[in-house]
Image (cartoon, rainbow, N blue to C red; front, side, top):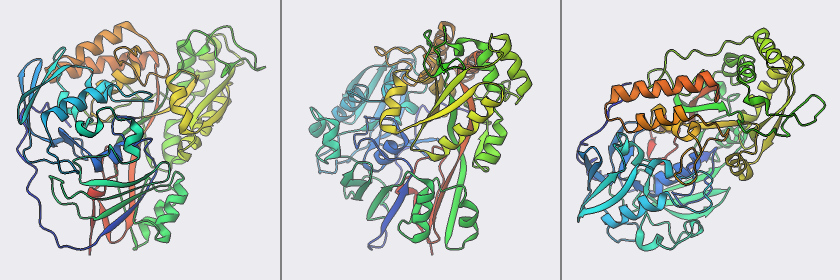
Length: 522
């Protein structure tokens, strides 16, 4: 799919559709739970799912990752560093007050400055120098340098109501006071780590949602999610257990939909100079230096992994083996990067060449809340142990995993990253540019990788307006990452949803689970 920069968008999504007045409830069993109802607090799948129901964005992203008008009916490039957005007229917040350009300016500024955010939205607004109110229904965004994908980046920024959010804390969203939005639903109950209850927002500016009330139940265990659907406790689930997929597909009481996803799974080896207790000698004693800083060690670990076995046998076809974080057909996919060959003999030789003929001990840190991640991490641990690197898995709850990873506390963290912009610049900027808290660079660079040549190349790519030239720069950047083994790509997820037979769900490449994508059928 070719990458195209939107300059002027079509007007209006359409008028409110007339539907029969009837009560309709939808209960969804979700694999990921939001850390907060504040749409700017955490850039995670559960939080994004919730914000899509409660809030709107200037530009919306469809399930195929194409752009469509949101609170802005059109946008255009005025100069290389100026974009003008025309706001939709007549939009009201769920409390009845009108949307204003000041709300938009406030939201863009706030989204990059949320205290204690484990992974925020600063990367999406890094290019923005200022937001100007250009009229009663328009804003002008001035960027520090040319920003070709600004509309794509803005599709991640939820617009919040300045009159209730200014001075509020993220906890005020959880309690409902600040959760005033322009989305299709409004929250009635937020029970952290348990459920969110929502009802239709009568002020919603778009096509009338089918469901009067929506309940998100957060069920981390994939087997428990499938059981909830089978028992009728929920109407729909995301990420059904791979063990239950054949049964659900064959049972006429249920429907299964799927699509290749944009989420890549990889390992991020530590590049810190000091040795970690998680990388020790065979007696468990600290090593003099961090062995993962040696390119030959990283290459050995990569060659020791049988990616096809992970995707086809361990994950039973619910993933696609990969040697890079972009997928075939995507803008900036790099055909020259081949999947590293599974070669245990070569892995042992590389380890010996690096001074570890007898290997060493290593710990993989994994996300405990995702059973599939733990299972894959255990499989990789066995593969590495076979070549002499005695590996154990430390499964850590999300409540501490994210913050510890951001502090570089792991030698080899298991990492999941959705490429929400559909181009490699998003992954390169977040995971592989030198981390800088002041500028918001590299917030997901858990490995503390730093390469000035790559940094400069990414900067050039992200300010190049010519799509074909920018793509070549992004391809060069990915080659540097691959040659350095700055990350160890494993696979891309295939997204699955299952529902009772009376409901059909339109599968989304971006893995989002939204009630507006579910439809009742005869």
